[in-house]
Image 1: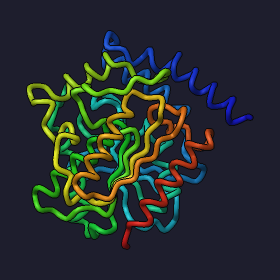
Image 2: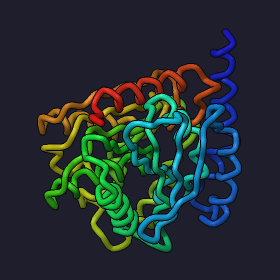
Image 3: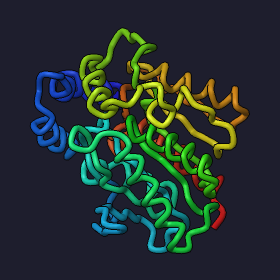
Length: 297
């Protein structure tokens, strides 16, 4: 009963406070400031340690919960490629560090409109290569991300494969944005977070002059063959539900192991409420177990 009431309250909070911020008429600079404040309600588990570091000239956050983390998760934050940061995602990454027992690395990758495609993907590859150069075996690495960061994780894996670089052990994506054409969006009865016009604007800013069908921008248009196992989590109350389903279908088509989990009556990246909402906490426990299952350290 308490959890049901909490779900209803959080849904209303997202719809009344967050969704209005994600409107195309609101300047990106203002959205960045206001959304960062909204994320303050997403809190990591007690005992999580955060350290700001730099590698290859790129700022990032190192997140650990265990004193002896085993394996590394390279996590890409969401925000439509135009907002968000390692700090906004301390809640998700803290819980993922706890449930996976790994060290989570969250790069502050370059964003549009200042830095459109391929800046984010280039930064993602740079950090992955740096982890390899530090001596981390590929089998001890995982990729993860939410929303745009989920699409970026898949795009990075495709680029690594195409360049003949060693691939990570697994990929976890939460409400992934995998088709920036937004031509096949789902129409839920209730969408507490995202607006179609906002994600259309974000897509234009990120793509610039690049075709939206570029698989490194919209992975559902690409070949997923050879990618590692993928866990996909999505809520039923979000317009990106079809992006998750189509990613799972593409993986099945290309003989990639993929598991799609649809959380009924939950919204876009509901995992930000882990530690408060039981189903969000359980989702990240599942994600952590999936990562541990495939890691070899």
